[in-house]
Image 1: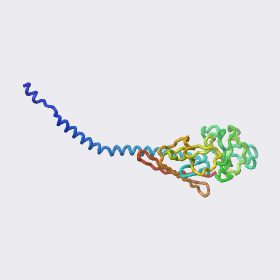
Image 2 (image 1 turned 90 degrees about the horizontal axis):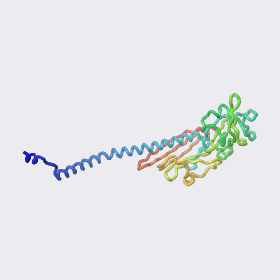
Image 3 (image 1 turned 30 degrees about the vertical axis):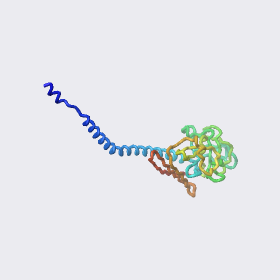
Image 4 (image 1 turned 90 degrees about the vertical axis):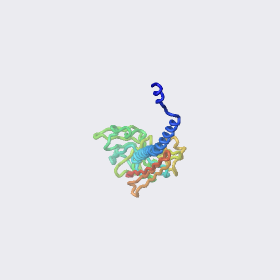
Length: 280
């Protein structure tokens, strides 16, 4: 009885184990072939989605800046860069009051009142402060060009509020502005960022750089070495193009941006247009 039980107990032979390993390897190879394409497609799709998100975020950030540009200040020294004078706020000045509350265009003036808006309660990034630059009726032409400071003056004291209704008094460096605005408007340029530019450098990066006024129109985009310390807005940039077209009436304009990003053989090209109001 014991001998019969021993004869019935059998295991795998070496040949059988080798055959099983070979069969499992063949099945695994076939499964890997069929699974590789969906996995590669997943990672490719993830890379494209990441590139698209980066490109979309970048152009939207730029569009937000461009919409706040001082009228008639946008320019493209080359198709790889774009420059403009940003604004933080604006308002209407008192005119023809015959005293210190109005802005005098017949002689240098140092103070004027802002109508219809109190400077105190507004958010800090929109509040007029010392060092900001007041611009009146910028046309972007000789004699009325903010880049050359023809129509600009710096704020020299913290604005004050008084009167009923309350008006804000703005103190500036003595200046005789060349032209009055038809709607008594003025714009405020932040003192910390008087000129802003975007440039695609040859190292695959899109950078945002800052310059100070006065700032003459350059013949070409800044050299990569001159903006090497500027903040990076996007990486993996393989191509970009900026185009600015204004109307004959200088009231409306269009900025067109084309941005291409590439990563691991995947490329995404995004085009975006920004409408600009050039009413000074």
